[in-house]
Length: 168
Image (cartoon, rainbow, N blue to C red):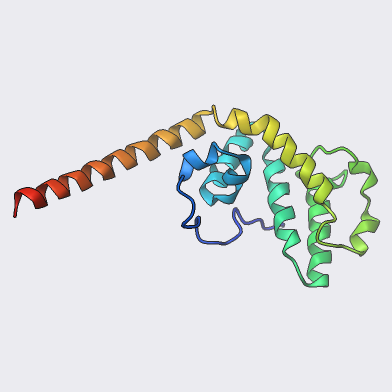
């Protein structure tokens, strides 16, 4: 079974990023896919649309590109092929040129061997699923919850400042 991480394992965000959570997700699909929580919500949405395989394939390709060991690369390439690209794939993605990618390419894998197909899937998500996701209940509920959390923490900090001022 192919194991796919929701993120690249980096701690959430850099100090340069001022936008957080849903605000950041709305700026681009790239920002959504960099946030583990964003990936989780996007996957949840795609599952309801019966197209979760697209983001799973994209994530698998991202992991694959980081693989250094040749034997591991061969194993992962075969897993990606069997899971997403072969005619018998359990989570087959719909990409052009899929039939031209046959098993012989798996014998000499390289980090960018799936790049063209990954780009097709990214564009499919970007111009199709992503815009619907931003209007979905899943996204809007998460955004509201995030805003409520922000408002309640702001109210608490205002109350703390006020109590310091009046209790001096």
